[in-house]
Amino acid sequence: MDDDVDDVKKTQGGAEGSGSGEAGEDKQEPAAQVSLELSSFRQVVRNRNFMSLWIGQGISSMGDWVIVGILLDSVNRLGGSTGLAIMMTFRFLPAFLFGLLAGAFVDRLEKKTLMIVCEISRCVLVVGLAFANSLWIICALVFSIETFSLMFGPAKDSSIPDLVGKEEVMTANSMSSTSTYLTMALGTMVATVILGLAALIYKFPLVASIEPLDKFQHQFAFIVDALTFIVSAMLIFTIAFPRKYSGKMPKIERGQIWKDFKDGIGFMRTNLLTRSILGVMIIGLIGGGSLYILGAPFAQQVLHAVGAKFTLIITFLMVGIVVGAALSPVASKYLPVQKWFGRAVVGFGIAMFVFALIDFYPMSAVVIFIGGTMLGYLLVTAYTLLHQNLDEDIRGRVFAAFQTIMRTCFLLSMGIFAVIAALFHVWIPWTAKKPVSKTLNIGFYSKSIYPAMLALMVGAIVVIIGGIIAIRSLHRWFESVEGQGPQGGESPRGPMPEIEPGFVFIQPEKQQEGEGGEPREGTSDSP
Image 1: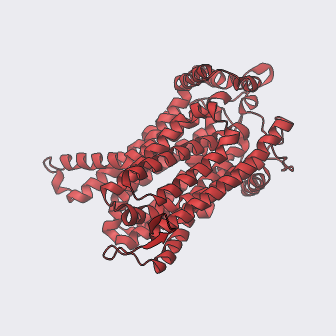
Image 2: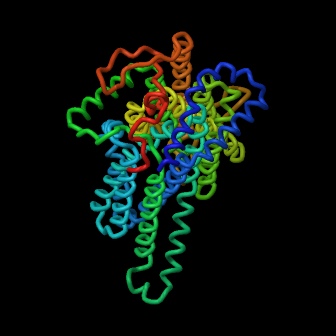
Image 3: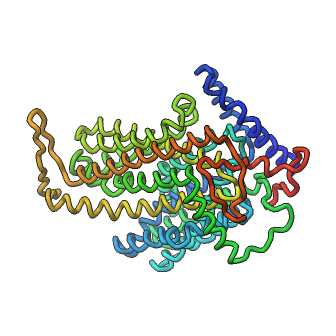
């Protein structure tokens, strides 16, 4: 346990001195900047606490996507497309009902204990999925799994600054985002491997007499998937998180949670940085979500790409996100966040617009890859800005809002752009049997246009508008920071003061030290 406490002191000790070196960092030569970034990467990789969280997150995230792959097939067999729609509704419903409220619990509870409880609970619920034979039982289990995921995600995201130094947060976020999107891309592949392994086991004597092959494959996959949450919980158990409370955790009253919830909403409305990032995420995700609902019809109508050709386009997008997230720490040395965050949003919108215009398949793949790299950069820098400028007492609520906004905006986008595409379809009645189009002729140039193409262009324009808003609002925030400098403030647990734009919280490491720089009493590796 003492070694773990030392790890916490080492990883957080460097954050205090990071502020004084920021001004000089911009003046370093490119070679020195790359060397600094490699040094930061080595520090993060050597950080046993963060690596345990990172590996656990990767395993748990892989489990999440295996669930999605197997569950879609199971529910389709039970209830068809109607069953899938009902199940997806239950999957998103917790975010609508208490996504923001979950953040208040995250900020009140010990993160380590909360994450372990969530992982064990999800393990038990996934085992239940293996033996569920009713659509409504499956929906109830999915609803419960998503509820625990709503608390696990913000607890994990908000704990990163507690485990690494301030100057290492960008690298840690880059690794975290890269892991998330890699597991998303690999999840269906892993699910396929698990199903193939189950088919081999089914050939063993007596196994075939237990269940039909398809049901046995699903049960086997769910049970293997449940083990990923146990492995994640065991890794999290080894992490030495700073303790929130030095003694026994005080009793949580219902009124306190409600007050924390209202304070968090008030903070997000008044803090310029948080309001700017969450605002641009709302606009950007509604516009960018059009790719989710329109990607398949666009590929079919414009690129004549179905089946494997369409999934390859999605693969290029996902690989682009992974590359953008992985390169974000290096890119931030040459492309200052204060200038390039908003520009990257606009760039992603432009990439979407160009993608919608192109009907040459190889070029479309290149453009969507470039758009993906910008999206990966955006996600990492957004998380880093919030991590570096939010107090530990408010992070859970902000990241819960972040996740809730992502889920909600994707749903809104699906509904909005399904309607927009349907309206364009009235004008251009394209069908697979009768693939009609309109021709835009401006004299020297003519272009065939399709309903999905036009709807996707509308989505791209929405993203570009979000980027322009981000440029303006974040410019104001960075100007206020440069003009005022960091300043302390009262914790959101107390009365919420009027928060000035550019408000920067006290860094977490200062909360974890007692007099003389010694670790605060109660820092422990126990859950």
